[in-house]
Image (cartoon, rainbow, N blue to C red; front, top):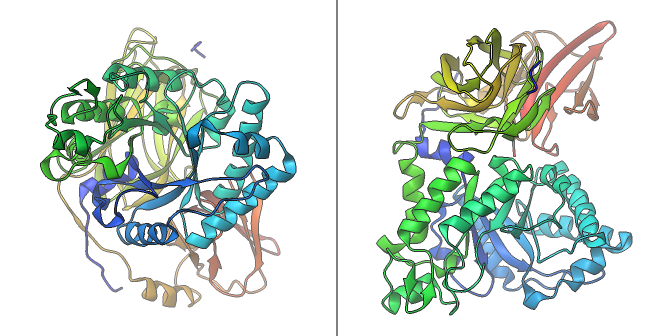
Length: 530
């Protein structure tokens, strides 16, 4: 084609839906700030800085371990994730990283130590802050290290992220983009007092997306301090600086208007915003994190009603390619779409049961195409739409339909029933206002699951975190249960002894459960959550 049972009442607030998609990442240093002062409700991820490696793959003692433990406890009680940031500027000494990454034995030691550290503290993942690998062998060693960490973290349902330079980061090979959950773009420290302008933020996002990083993985970094004095934003205000300016007495910083502009930029072009660092923020009405949060609410009409998915940020696909896009906002779009091609976007949350409006930004030279929407690899079909002719491959229009979805987290798929169209983005608008939904009590579900004949091959809860229950409508004795990941790799096999399966050790993603007994085979899909 072209070149191109017991009812639980849940009142769900829309802002929770949005924040599950738009990341707000704050660094908390080991040497400054109180974990009790963190505004947890306005963050999604917190990175504790820093854990330092040794040249042979060991780990130096973490500073203030009790602070880390308190941070994890408070963050988890507020539903937020905590990662350990490894490395940092460290006076410009990255010798330990260079040594361990270039030696297979040291590298394996480091990876195993990181697994143990994450498990010891109950962390949600790792943020690698190697400042900075060099071009050539160092860059290749960095990619090898990240691949090993990616495998080990994701197999355990943990996150892997990295902090990278704002621009000119060629030593971070493009292969790393698929290994990480997201990259924290350090769009600050460019030069002197004007070290972190809005234009520099634009350049940073454009640089990484231009190299192929998915927009959803581009997390824009902002400073909570000024240069060249290195004073915290809070200290600058105490000296008389304005929260609504960017320069004071020769010191450049980001005031509230610039922070809000950058947050809007991150909404339009990226996947979230990051700040270095939380202890430098002011309190009350002058808080920069509060300014970020205001934009988070404003962008969703005060209620988190809409999520925009950039087409090029797919997690898996078949047959499509990306290209530069001239639609409003620029970036990339998906093209070269033929019949039977598809894109899948993982872990999209529908917070309430009901009708959703789904919009698609499309372009087509001649029309005649048809797209359809589905959930969980086609197990739930939501309907199809004809794609009209727009008169050009970069002439864009918006088409939409309403679909009905039960509350839950799904892998969303866009399928080409007939090709010949481009896709720039998808917008999903939830029902207005908080809604009440019903949910079967888990204890009652377990009793049903243990009773053969209670259902006909239904898996629940789906998505699942720990134990997957089966309503089979028959006695499963003598059968075998197998679970396969999206690559077809078998990850679980078990003789049927109960109507539940422990999936807690699986990495997040889409899986297929296969039951076999003599000549009978039943297949069902489920999503494993974090």
